[in-house]
Image: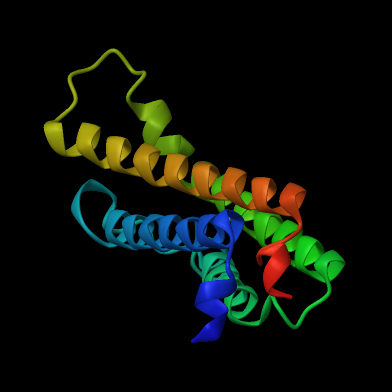
Length: 147
């Protein structure tokens, strides 16, 4: 538990990014399996990439004091790229539903809410990705005086 005391603000930001990506993944799974988009299926990349990112984040949070700073920066960069892939793929699998709303026909509340939920999930993935980019730039997840 000493690794918790050693974390700086960027270590906690890393945890926030992991939580946001978990929320986004849950939003995607619920959005894909219920409501208007129930038959659309679940894309594996949008689920597996965040799982790897979350596991990597937990490992970095716990072992960042034992890992070289350059490797921490590289790992956060790779995690950010995984989340970028998930964000783009989430957008790609929902673009048809979003485009359907542009047709000048009346749409049901279910269709509109399904697209709104998908947009929320995409935004959460994007914010999580930005958080990982910020932690990549910081490069250090532990306090300097604790080494």
